[in-house]
Amino acid sequence: MSKVNQHISMLREDFNKGELLEVNLCKAPDLQFEQWMKEAIDAKVNEVPACNLATVDENNKPSARIIYLREFFDNEFYFYTNYNSRKANDIVKNPNVCLTFFWPELERQIRIEGIISGFASADKSDAYFNARPLDSKIGAWSSPQSCVLKGREELNKFVLDNKEKYQNSEIPRPAFWGGYIIKANYYEFWQGRKNRLHDRITFTFKNNHWQIERLAP
Ligand SMILES: Cc1cc2nc3c(=O)[nH]c(=O)nc-3n(C[C@H](O)[C@H](O)[C@H](O)COP(=O)(O)O)c2cc1C
Image (cartoon, rainbow, N blue to C red):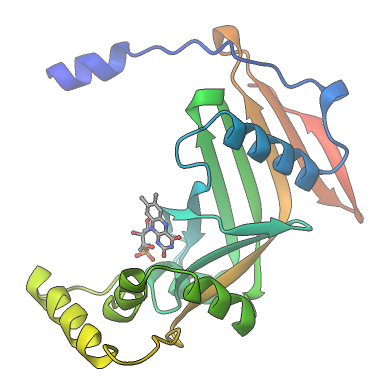
């Protein structure tokens, strides 16, 4: 066995930072999510809004990548990306998606399943794009996200071309770039506990209300 394999096979983390009990649970999952988000921010968790977005393509092949959650309210979750990317192509064929957050500092995981209910409004996408630093705006214009490049030089050239193009003008949001809305229908809040006996509480939207259940760890 290689040293790396030996090392990872021996890594053991025991979790003991908290518990998640039904008595302390918020009545609605978006409130529980907000509560845990607040606690993650207060605990200075690294990369709080970074989460894994899983999509499925037309052949039922899943793929996943990290994105930033940028806004949430009323069980709707917003993220921003390139509308021609691999994830965007998956979403066109299959709107079912899953988000997973992992906050090791709090020993917490949150899983959110839902459906892409549409694009963020043009106003919202414009507002978010306009708030980005100039170089990120140039980056959005310059990256044919998920496409194969001839090499780094090709990307550098796109950047130079766009810098020149927009040197004397405002940089508008590209039509191929903006937000998506995920409408959540399932949440799982996971709190690590001792001896792998973790707490797992789920909220499932059924018959117009949120059904709360506890899963075995
Ligand atoms: C911390 C972190 C945050 C990221 N945030 C975003 C994001 O908000 N939007 C995005 O399109 N890509 C983001 N990415 C890049 C994606 O992981 C991914 O490489 C990119 O979206 C292309 O994915 P795709 O080819 O599967 O569509 C982020 C990566 C990391 C590591």
